[in-house]
Image (cartoon, rainbow, N blue to C red; front, top):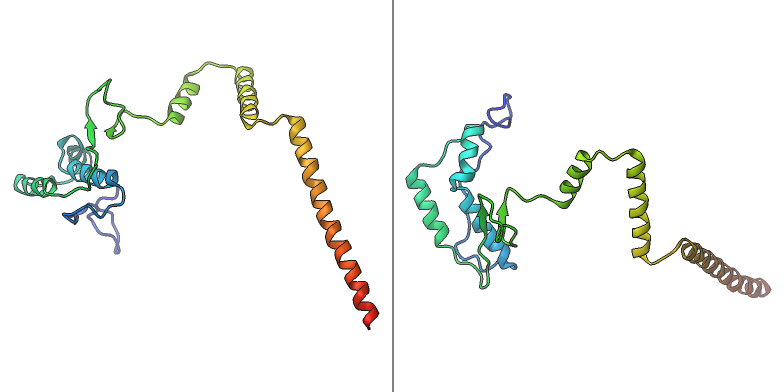
Length: 183
């Protein structure tokens, strides 16, 4: 825990005491970033989020007059044109819960879903090796090159490098002969 750490150079508070935000947020280049900042500020006073900090970490919640003042300040912020409204999914919303501007604790990265699937799988080592081989083949197909084409490409690169080296050697050799005659 970062709270109340011992030591001469530690500070017992790891929570912001205030947040300064310009009222006119039209300076943001991305309107979605501006409205995401507003969603963050709203979450600071949303019981679904901030109460967890109080319960789990002993944070002191703001008083109702501070909360009211902060919420009024958030409402007065001026967003750029076209700024989307971010929402928080607190219970399953099968239609809008996967929306672009929805903050949901239920979302997972695809890598997490695939890892969980593999962890719960009873696949044998051979089955996993077969799946890896199939994925490698699929990757090669998407790259558009067969093994033979890769070997041909490598040979062409080697020959090109050799030609470049010969060009330099045969360009320098006559110059050296020319300079040696003048001496």
